[in-house]
Image (cartoon, rainbow, N blue to C red):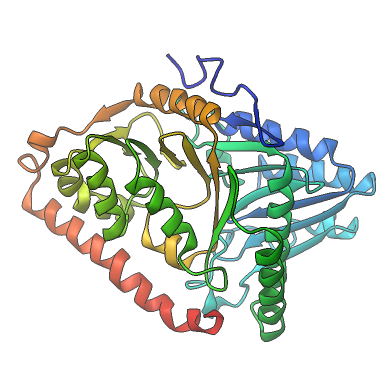
Length: 391
């Protein structure tokens, strides 16, 4: 069984004025992005942590240029740290055609602290795609035979307007100077007034200047009251309170399944996750590692509620980076997500609780502990001082 064998994975469903469908790999995601850009008539907002030269960025640039030729307003925001290898003139043709491009946190001294880790396309403030994919060749595959495994969601409805407003705030903040910070605060204030989290479809944001801790608290609140948690995370380093919430789910008779990366692009993050394996297994969670390709997805299924977006389950995503998640209290969409999750498990290996500790060498234990402390103590400490400027 492949990840797309079930027709339900990407079947469109409707709720509360919204329509949505899963995009279970990079092939589906970039095809959907091209279709939305081609259909846009008024405005396109594109925001990505990482953009790499070559494909699929060149095809996306061509689609944006075609949109400009139709008179569509086009704005692009990409992160300086994540897109460090992108030539400075890559988007020059788009700018020459009247498009607007900004680099987030361009000052080198600020890049380690201020990162826009979000991945977002919004067209006409009506249709959007969110997920974990960046714009790079490693994402443009099926996640099994080639390309990293990642997940995105295409959604149409009122939340797209909230996503467009969220883009406005981040676009204003991009230069990271006093004027930009002031404009960002004004935009965030407007967002709070117009788009308060409520109803079955909610936008949750995190990062300095957004409502502190909201994303983490809402996710933890759902987990604490759940009976069935399925977490697909490329980088797994949940804070203590989240780990306790997961253990309480199991202790209360529920189940927790964690699908993590068997291969990774950030070895230190995988070593740090290993530091928590014994604790999670002892608490009753079932733990799996995805085998064929690098797993980069961020998908949380908590009973009939789904979270999807750019946010990893680690301290940097929850407390430092700029992130977004959609919270979707949507039983039909959650059922489709469980089908996708089950398909991914077929390409995974379960980590046995009984033998995990016995088969590890002392140096692997030491390496995991060192990586854990680096990512949970040292990295936040280095980021803390510049973060104070945004509160």
